[in-house]
Image (cartoon, rainbow, N blue to C red; front, side, top):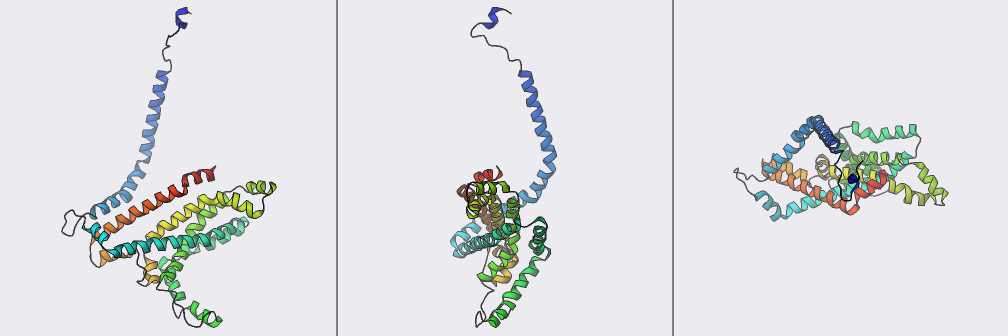
Length: 307
């Protein structure tokens, strides 16, 4: 080989450039193939999800005479009743989520500690409410909680209180009914996260001198947080759109956004006002979820939990 080939400053021709070009072409063709395979699902999402939201957004800017206007949003800003409705909606959703966490997390932990056969039987009881209509379950709570219902009658007979307590047609009855309906949506993700935790971690913590309580709070509980946050977000988002339970158990005293949307459509036939309420609720929901993810650092928690 010539000495000139090793001269300082000499630049060798890239021998692998055709190979790199071929790799890029193969990667591009693979992405296009994946896009072609996903196109039916993407088209379905576009038709079922994106198009209705876009149509809802368009209707919110249409006045009653068909012209473009911001009157529906201006009415929401000017009227204090809309602020109270949104506050009630988020209040009910937050309280229901907290009650589901207080009840569902210990229940999921209990189920995760059972033998597989016993846990499967108990999970059937958790899933049993799904086999009954939501409307039937709501009216069942109405029968139990009304002034002359079973709960008041039993409590008076046992001497717990002397007069019937108002447990329905208020916030209390609404929270009881919604917590019962939403509880399985929190138990199932938390139970799945708990069952995936390697029990060797707890044994290692015990060998290092940790008490059972310390091992739970320092090892088990952090590893179960991904399932807990997933279940809490599912419950919170579903509660924002609840309609049947607040109508029946709230008795017109607990007014949520979904009820006001229904009134705008059925009573006033005002699709623009109803669409504006839906758009604002969607924006507030997305903003709340984004703020919660930034505040709680869910990406970091989920990453540690998966690791």
